[in-house]
Length: 78
Image 1 (cartoon, rainbow, N blue to C red):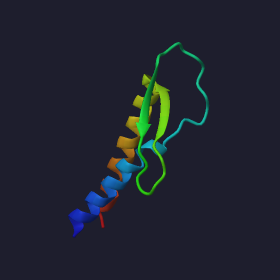
Image 2 (tube, helix red, strand yellow):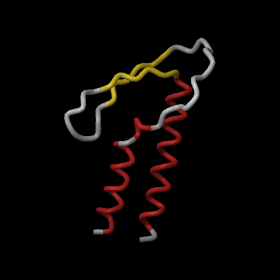
Image 3 (spheres, one colour):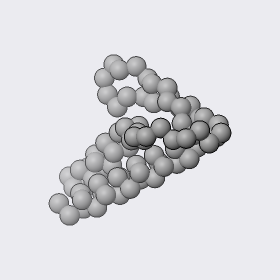
Image 4 (cartoon, rainbow, N blue to C red):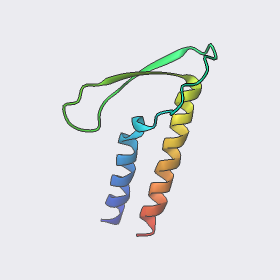
């Protein structure tokens, strides 16, 4: 049961990965935009196309990995 809770927390964190959004619009650095289609976690909400620079995607990925690790550490103590 405990491993299921950890797995569920990790899966929820991964599904919410597209939620992290930069608050301020960065200055135009001339970087090429990379567009991804993000599927919603649940429901009939249509897919959403999001375009960001490579560095923005890397920052979002790093934040999501930190959140997943934090979630797993919190679940391990319960």
